[in-house]
Length: 77
Image (cartoon, rainbow, N blue to C red; front, side, top):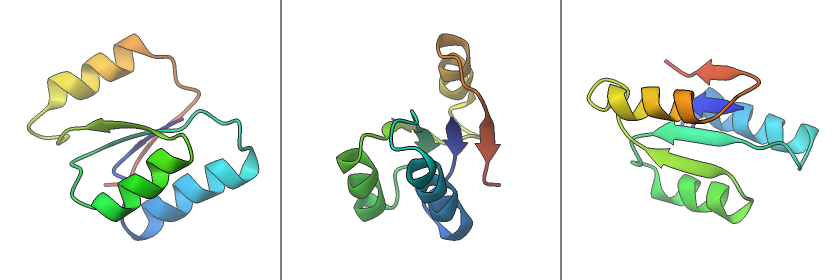
């Protein structure tokens, strides 16, 4: 599962729900990295973090999507 955004409001709930549903879920979060405390919490439970801005670093987002197979992508626009 890839969550784009995921460190504010609903995004945090989505990531938590994915991990609560099945602790073995492989959850990735692609975001700007502005919420350091939240990212540290994610890192501590095994979430893979990719730092980038969806508008400025689209090449990085595209590479992530091409290099890894995700069951679903949730964009927290």
